[in-house]
Image (cartoon, rainbow over all chains, first blue to last red; front, side, top):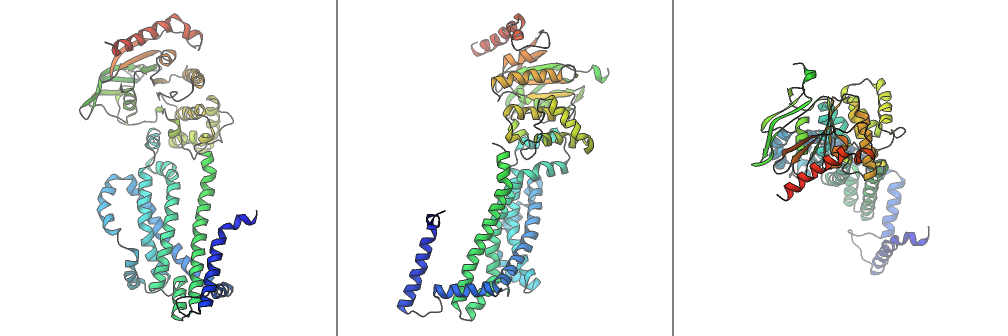
Length: 253
Length: 258
């Protein structure tokens, strides 16, 4: 490895340096901006005293709970709709009517039902995750190779057995991709909910910094969110590659 | 009449139209128990559709398809199918042994007995020691052998083969022809083998049913009186082989230039 490996960092560092210099030279004072060096110090502080990690855990817990509930219900129902043409016909209008509701429009309703807290946020994330997981799972089931379905019929596999032995393994790669996309959306909705109403997590921490008129901490959380988003996505990507990277060599050329 | 005297497969005045287009027109023939019958014809003659009717995946508009005297209503475990596209018929996430196991799992074979059965089936199709490989790690010929082993695991009374060697290279194809002939010889298994290759049909069949296309009709049914076991060199040079080859090709010539 040489210095050349890190050439991608050059532009961001130059931009940060330029920002630092121009703010210092111009002597601008505004609550909307902060010196990159102050942001760096704030970042060290929230990471050092553990507050950032506590808030991260709050956000992630709500996301996990919501994804678990909305995702698993979505996957199960998606499999069912993918298998049953009658069910998919019957439900298609209802799905098209409910699906366009923006997840954040659920915030007032969830607030009335659950009050502030993890449960309310998890409910909103569950609603968010439900639709993409439902639709993407359904289409994954519908696109399972017909030949495999015929193999199941010719071998006289039971209904349950053909789902567990053929359908589920066949849709797994597409469901995992769907999950990765859904986690990205859930992250946005979680932060939005926390900024808008819910007094917990990273979004709320940002709002506190804003209300306390401490822009450097506000920006520090923005940087933290960017890193967290990157870590989540890269982590899921690696997991997916690990599971199927091995298989793809072994599976089909 | 007892079931054992019934033909294993019978097509009784079978017709099929899709969207007012006749695909199959008044096809009648029978396959006796233990017989190896090859159905040969150009693409579009409905030979695969006939095979699907025996499985019960397609139904005729007119006439009746029967297995051992009983009208076909749907797939049964006694009928095994080797599909042409082995790449799509095997489960890519299961090993060769796992793919064979699927048939045993479907039949409810106790777990303890499976391993031995799988090992002997893989041995039979020449895949000893390849049981733990995934389809993607096997050549086309070997993948097709896995599919054959899975069919044998069903212990079928009727084995249906849909252009099983069509996608393989010539050498592999000949090897597999000899292997399948050897495997079914003396087991009493009835085979209906669909192909577009006239030489292959004569080489493998006890009888060859030749179909015309548009719509699919029986053109000719020929007995193949070549001794078994057959040999890739001598059988293909036998006067009987050449005579049949002449008859079948002449028919194609006639129908192409009437």
